Amino acid sequence: MTMVNESPADTALRADPAYEAATQVFNLFAPVSPAAAVTAHSVDEVRSAIRHARRQGLGVRVQATGHASATARPMGDDLLIRTALGADVEIDALRRVARVPAGTRWASVVEAAARHGLAAPHGSSPTVGVVGYLLNGGLSMYARYTGLAVNSLRAVELVTADGELRRVDATDDPALFGALRGGGGGFGVVTAVEVALFPATAVVTGAAFWPATDAARLLPLWRRWTETAPATATTSIRVMNLPRLPEIPAVLTAGPILCLDGVVLAPGEDDLDAMRQQAQDLLAPLRAAAEPVMDTWQEAGPTLVPDTHMDPPEPVPVLGDHMLLGELGDEGIAEFLRVTVDRPGSALTVAELRQLGGALATAPPGSGALGRLDARYAYSGAGVPGGDATEQEIREHCALVREALGRWDTGRTAPTFVASLEQPQGHLDAEGVLAVDRVRLRIDPDGLFRGDVAPGSSLLV
Ligand SMILES: Cc1cc2nc3c(=O)[nH]c(=O)nc-3n(C[C@H](O)[C@H](O)[C@H](O)COP(=O)(O)OP(=O)(O)OC[C@H]3O[C@@H](n4cnc5c(N)ncnc54)[C@H](O)[C@@H]3O)c2cc1C
Image 1 (spheres, rainbow, N blue to C red):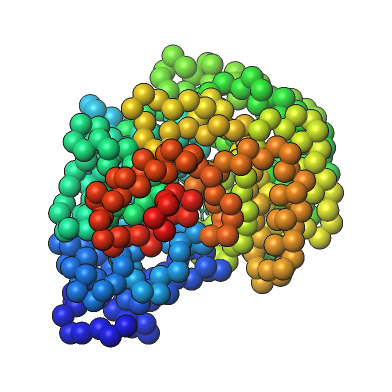
Image 2: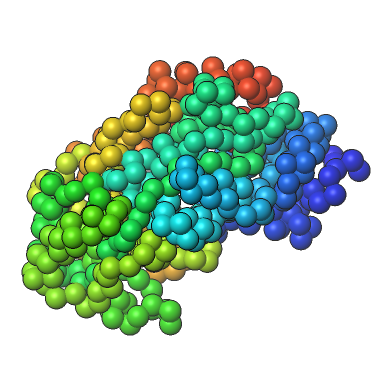
């Protein structure tokens, strides 16, 4: 692709430091390689980049942090716009809404909201970008209380293919607003979003760890608790094979380990006693069944929650898989144990079951293309190629788990958990895909953003 001398100041080609900066990704196993790349710091820079792409005959792609690079389509003929619209997060405490510029990571929203006694529907990593997470559904640490995080979107500001800056919400272009909410992307460059927050007087949050040899006793107890758990509690349970690194406590790297983490929320002052009791109901039977080797569960404020899951803050190579599962029962849990804990030399650094249900099960009135997750657990498994396992070994182990849990696979997926382009995707039904495509054809008739559409979300690509 020939580039002429009419590019915005910092539109860059390969080997240029500005190109390297704009194409940084979190998942080092899935680098991106667009024809050109630019970091946009303002709406004007976004517009100028879109004009430039049109002149050059390039498609337009968007990313902020590159956390989802493993599910991005190849970018060979595209201009990648990295959004870094560095303004502050603004909190409207009365409406309980945050206005968040594109490029902001969740940690900044959590900090800003907490100053007003509010919490945000963030996921397990403070460094994930707000916009990419929300547009693709977003499974929050509070998911069973908030529902899918995308339902918290109140407005989206975006520059569309015609260069126009639009603000869409439930009354202003509701069809586009609906398609933006979980429809699979490809509508333009989002420059800011407004997100509903919720009151959080206190939380009980943390992680407890046991040798994985205790998992056969603990996992069935946890599963039974999930059957009647309150919606104010959201947890996940993981079998982990952690590398021996100085930053990881030695007690967690001595062998395979089981980890239970999550949040129990007290929205108001009156909910504090209930929160403490709910945390007790979750933790006491597990602590009694086997003594944890490390246990950080504690009463705290919401700013502690983004660190609870201990996701890696720095880029790493990751290769994994994901399924949304129905009720596993004791039989499904036994299968999960068989292909994770009972398998010496596991290639999976993490095999996780996130607890679904609660508010996730129902799409609230007026929700968008994706408003709910119809499943009981979100499974994800991942390894680090070139770490303790090879790419081949990780792929084989992922396939083994997929086969073992196949009986419980709902065939649906949570878009933010899908781990690669090849993986089956199923977050929209056929009718939903068509409805979103109709909006795409209206908003982007030339398909400028078509490469940015998530696989499984469109008949147009
Ligand atoms: C360590 C880790 C922990 C995670 N934890 C969770 C979790 O708890 N819950 C959960 O649901 N997900 C989780 N995820 C997945 C994460 O939410 C998705 O990868 C999400 O898409 C990342 O958004 P991003 O903007 O940071 O990433 P990017 O890769 O930068 O963007 C992802 C996609 O979002 C779109 N996009 C981003 N910015 C814009 C914009 N300004 N305009 C238009 N489109 C845009 C683009 O289509 C882009 O391809 C996690 C991922 C990692 C690596």
